[in-house]
Image (cartoon, rainbow, N blue to C red):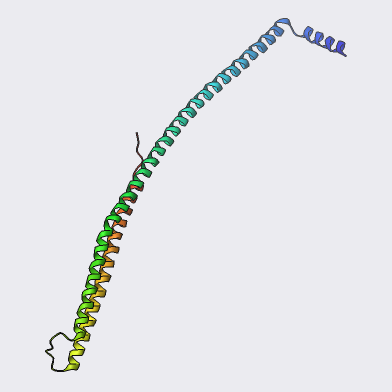
Length: 188
């Protein structure tokens, strides 16, 4: 079988002139060189593109790392500022406590005065300008009720003032926290 293949090739070579065979071999060699050149060029382009992508990825990683670092610094700054705001809030509330205690003491003092005046009125030591004893008793009861309402209102207003003062402190702290949250992250 090999022998017959060789005879067929020899017959084929004998049919075509030598210059044609030489041209065919030269064309095949040039085609091989051209394909090799294209392959090498494609490899070089691929390597250049891979190098460029690696540089871009490295730069992107550097930027991401720096942004992450800056964000962490910003978070730490915000946390420290939040702690300062909360500390200031607690100090303001502590400073408000003596005022609230003073308001409660004032309300207590008013309550004691009302009880003292009511006791004096019940004892009958007050001179009466009323001609009728029933009218005098009704007048005394009305005075006791009025003084009782006054004492109750005083206590309620003292509590309300203390609560309002704490609300003002909490509102101011909330505004400071809102300003902190809305603070833009520092840029380079």
